[in-house]
Length: 181
Image 1: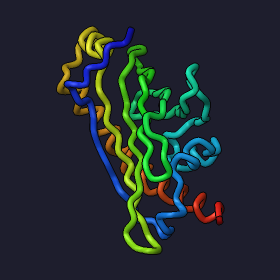
Image 2: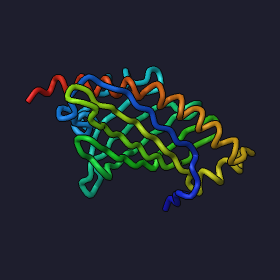
Image 3: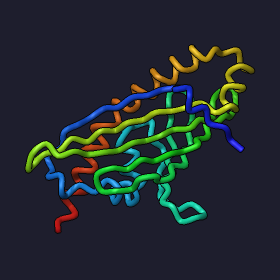
C-alpha cells in the first residue's frame, strides 16, 4: 500500500487566467472528461503527451494524463473527489519515471472558476504534490536531499503550471462557447 506523506509538500502552485465567457456557461467537469487528446497536448506543448478519461473500479470519474514535469515522465491517475461545473478536485497517486528509476508521488489538481461579471470569469489551476514513503526512500537511495528534491520539483512544476494555466483556461472557454444552451 502506498503511504502518502501529506505532512510534507513537494511542490505547490496556483495560477489564474481571466476568460471572456459568462460563468454560467463554464462546465469544467464536462470539459475535463471530454477533453480530446490533441487538445490536451496543445495546452502545454511539448510537456503534455497524452490524456484520456475513464472510471475507477467503483465508478468514480478518472482522468489519465501523461506529461513531462522537468526531467520526469509522469503518469497521473486523477480520481475526481469533486467533479462539478465550477470546481473539480482531482487526486492522483502518480507514477514518475526519472533517469534514476521509477517512484510515486501524490498530486492534487484543483480546477475552479469564479464569476467576475456577467461576461467574464477567472479560471484557477492549482497543483500541490506530496511525497510518498517510496519517493522519500528513492531520493535517499539516489543521494538527493529532501530540500533539493522539493526545490527541483517546485521549480519544474511551477513553471509547467504557469504555462498550462492560460491554455487550459482558453480551452475551457472554447468548449463553453461551443456548448450553447
